[in-house]
Structure formats: structure tokens, C-alpha cells
Length: 354
Image 1 (cartoon, rainbow, N blue to C red):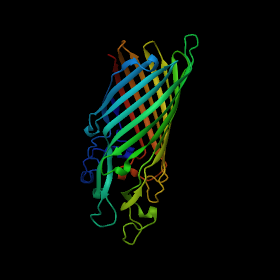
Image 2: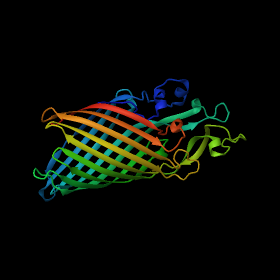
Image 3: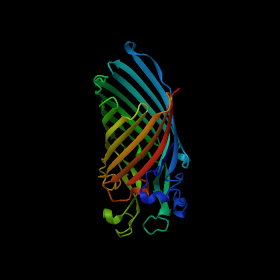
Image 4: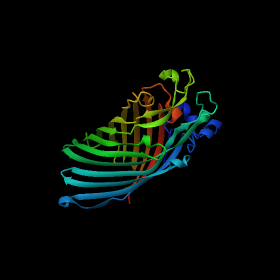
């Protein structure tokens, strides 16, 4: 289980708004199903490893599994992921692996679906907005090859291996948010190294080229910022004006990972991973204010201390810190888009092998 203080990735100024029962929020459905920004998440991760002879009689392992996340406060966020790994040993420390992941339904947050200028003043106030659930299914397939470069032995503890992989990722939203669908190829490379018998490090890079279909959507635009009379009332000073514009969420993302694990005793070790992710959006739509020219940078640090209580039972304590910043000053939160945010988590892990 872990406690996460920002499960919906809202900006610091909006954490208190999640779960609020104000008249505008109730009328618009802005936070429907989003009961609390913070939550306690209990994760059950079960796997069954089936091993037998494979190619040339070498070890072959098939590992089906399921991961279930139970959110104590945000019941709509509860989800299951089904997994399947196939690993074939090639001898001499080399192996090939196929992996599949599928999450049938995941509630991300609520997004703006439409707006109605009820009072006719040209601007859309919070109560005049209409939000709908942003729920999607997710699938991912990857294949990778691990090649040993140098074997770690008692006489020479240094060891190294490289892992090369490629895959395909797809995210499909339920109506009315088909324009948020993303799909495309992924690739990764990692250098795995044993610096000694007790110290292991990993350097990795991941690439995702994800495409979306440009779609006409309802946006809230500031006329002064775009220099146009969008509502036809003869002035260009209105804010949050309803306008239908083409949006393109296609993006390229780069992830650099540095991780390591140190064995403190025969039973206890500590691991840490630092990750930097950058997303660059390729929209060329002139009034796509959320994505045209947008770039996101996220840093994440995770640390875990784990100890083997027995041959079968392992306990771990983990903490995580993450923050994201955009290269834009506009507040995307009004339409449900991800804004600048920070999140912190602390958790307890219990592992048991039958």
C-alpha cells in the first residue's frame, strides 16, 4: 500500500478543489468521481511463473499475471492490468523476452466536453461548462533482447549487459474523447552493470512516437490572447470564450533513467531510480493553445529499502517524489488538461513467493 498526495496530477492550487461540493463544480461535473486529490492505494500484484525447456533445451519461462489497484477514496479509479511475459534463455547470459500488458478501463480525470453561454455575456463561467469522464483502455506490447558483455564472477565481480527493445503502445478513450487516442512505436536501450558483488547500476533511454488524429473540440479561449472576436459580439476582450477548434495531441517523448541498487547486508538492500521525461507536442493547429508549441518536463525520484525476512517473505519501504513543469503560462486546468504539478508518495511493500 502507498499514500499518494496527488493521484489526479492537479496543480498545487487545485488540490483543495478536488472533491469540493461547490455549486459550479456540481453543475459542471468538473470533479465528478474525483473524491480526493490524496488517496491510499493498495496494489495486489500476482504472478505465476511456469518454467520448462524451450529452444535447444534451454530454459523457457511463461509468466502470466494480474495487477489490481484499489483506491480507498476514489473508487472510480480502481483498475486491473493483465500481464504476460515470455522469456527464452539463449545461453551465455543472453535472453529474448516478449511482454504484453492490457488495462481494460482506467479513469484518468474529467475533461471539458462542451460549454453553453447561458447568460449570453460572451464568456463561459465555471457553472456553464460540461465535463465528462475521461476513461481509457491501454495496451502495450514489447520485445527485447539481452546481451551479456562481461560476466560477473567471484574473481572478477564486474559484469555488464545491454538490453535492446522495441514495442507498440495504444491508448483508446471512451466517448466522447476519441481525439485523445494515442498510438505508436516505442523503443528502449539499457546498460546493466555490476560494479561489484554488492553494487548494481542501470542507465536507460526510452523513446515513444505517439500519434493522434486531429479532432475538432470545444476550447475556452481568451480573445485578447488570440487576437480575434470568437463569439461575434464585436469586441476582442472576452475571456474563456467557447470556440470549436482543431486539436492535435501527437507527441514524441524521451525518457532517461539512472538507477542503482546496493546490498547493505546479506538480507537488506537499498535501491534508487532517477527519471527525466520530456514530451514535445507536434500540433501545428493555430488555435490549439493547449498543444501547439507545448513541451513538458517531468523529474521523478524513487527510493526503496527492502529486506528478506525469510526465504519467501520480503518487506520494503518506498518513497517517491515527482514534479512536472510546462513551457507555457496558460492554465490548462480549466479544460481538464495536465498542468504543472508535484506529487509525493510513501508506501509499504510485502512480497511472498510460494
